[in-house]
Length: 246
Image (tube, rainbow, N blue to C red; front, side, top):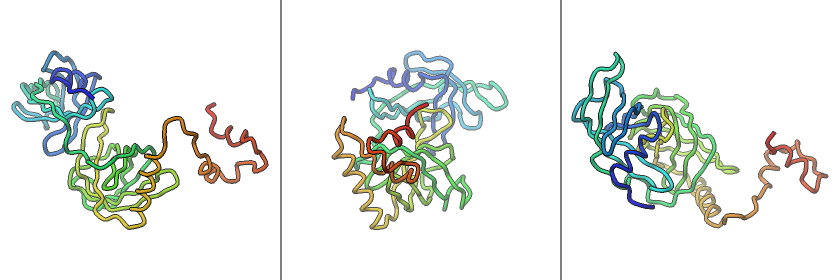
């Protein structure tokens, strides 16, 4: 990874027509990008969330730069519509995002769901849907549209192929997702049953041992689709058809 300049980081952050920013309190909102020039960017933002002089935070996350935090200062915030302000921000600093978990993190795809227990903006008992991002020994992250905030407490339910994990979690950080309107919630396990600890160790070990180019073990897929497979089909043609793109 390379260290981006402030201008490079701002250009990457505002490379699409809209990007996500957040306040120091963790409120995430959409910034509609109009122009970018050196360390300045202009666009639109919710009127009730921005004001001249306030600090905003952006995040750059890609293969070239890795994950970096960008500090932005609001230079101007003028009336645009009853809902939006015409905003100019100046990028003042860029630095590695040191709030991320230091433990080994394994990329994880799939769907997760959580139950809100004690959240600021989500009613208790609500089912919070999300897409898994990664897993470590001490926490998990996922992308969601729900308005989670640091300190929120939930019960996490996730399926990692053949293993299921359920645990109490606390939201440690909320960052903008590369996709506008979504946010990346990083959570720490507050209580993790011993059985789930073993499951996580197995998942991490499996990821470490697996090398690029190794064949995929399809036994779990056979178990999942069960009766749809022809046991007498030794060459696997039938089960491969189940997963072939149309």
